[in-house]
Image 1 (tube, one colour):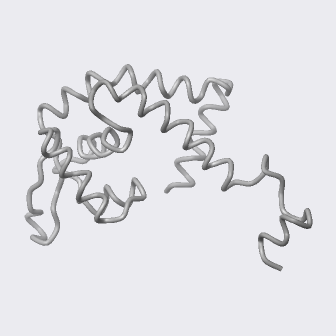
Image 2: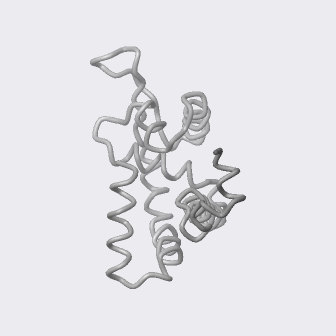
Image 3: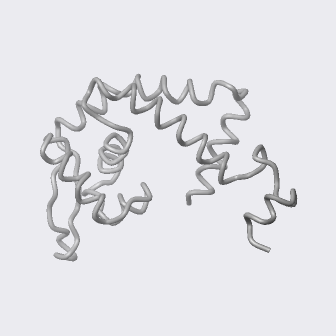
Length: 149
């Protein structure tokens, strides 16, 4: 029996228990909040995330790693990094150990931007996690980190 047939017969879990539906709804809500908050800076959540990954990776993050962490197709990562490089928030350079790999490093302007949006990103986090008690927040974040690896 297909998944669709199971859902029609009532054998599937309810929407309230369906992890795919819940994750889509949760990520959509969080991304809408983050995108709205970052819009005045000319950013979207994925731009912020890529700059943050570059800043948190000593020596620069390989483009492949950024794509893996953000769940993006390699061509989407290239376009994303192109946008960030044009805005002078990151720079690319060849990996000295593997010339085929491009490392993405944060620029001083990128660091300043992260500093400027730090409080805004914290506010988004607090809004998204507001329905949870403090102990639940820690468990939720730990569980998400485990799920995404």
